[in-house]
Length: 225
Ligand code: CDP
Image (tube, rainbow, N blue to C red):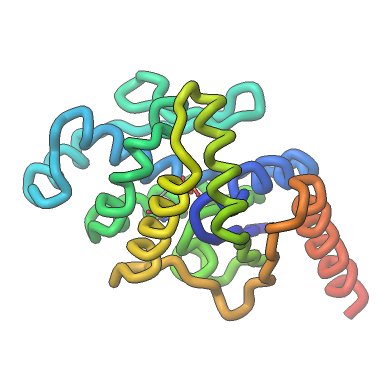
């Protein structure tokens, strides 16, 4: 079974996907974390998204791995755990440019399909229901009011010992959504058959329950057909 969750920045996809996966006893994959890893590595090595051949060479050499530890997805670059570093605001500011590069997307999509092979999994991102798994069993699209999303992101950053004003975060989220939605290759888009969830006034538990109910009732419906 493949479940996809797409949606704009800070709409609660990762937390929701992780909890739904735990309740259903299946795997999950945070594809944004993968694009963040590549961005982090490019930044560390002073590679600009404009230096195409250098970026291609670097990507070829880059060894990214993912593993689950204490129920959290951990990301590694060449063996070093970068799970916290990739959530920094500097990475958030640069990730949309890097993730719009065709050769980066091709490699990530291939890795995502391989990772999901032969298992039941929830995969969350921007293009999962439209491009990566267009035939997924269940598709959801999460969104929320901009201010609510900025507040959620601010809380995440504080947990990571970073601070940023709400106004700046709203601007950054708005810009990232614009870049992600307007890029040519696999833009952020709702799949036609996705169930839309406005999480502005929902708690995480309510989001999780909504998705689990939708999956379970649909499964029952299928059995009775
Ligand atoms: O957690 P947050 O909503 O801030 O974003 P994320 O899911 O960590 O994704 C970070 C960035 O990766 C997005 O802004 C996109 O530029 C890119 N991304 C993408 O292009 N395609 C995906 N399937 C997932 C993320």
